[in-house]
Image 1 (cartoon, rainbow, N blue to C red):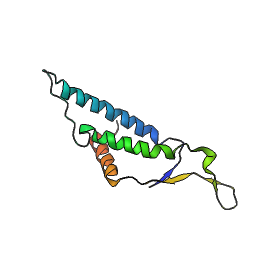
Image 2: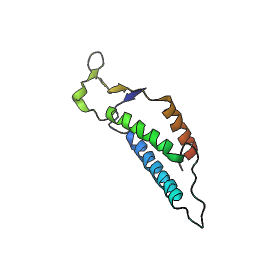
Image 3: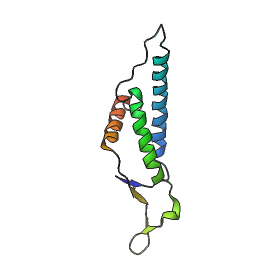
Length: 113
């Protein structure tokens, strides 16, 4: 995958998703360790269960973070004539299984709103 350096903008929604998944995982863990007597324990569906989706998001953030906010130290790529500068890009290889997990996570969480 070719990743454009957008000064960290792609990381913002991923970190928000990571926080949501961490909360769901914590609730799931708490219900397993100390199930309430008057409520059903939280049982998340795949891939949300057992921190599977959380781990995939964390791997994506870890892979994507170094490609963002690189600054001018990487050099500049100018168009012919030197009038415009291209955005810095990085080639990134991600496991297909993680992409599939993220798609399944989006489907499980549903559309926003």
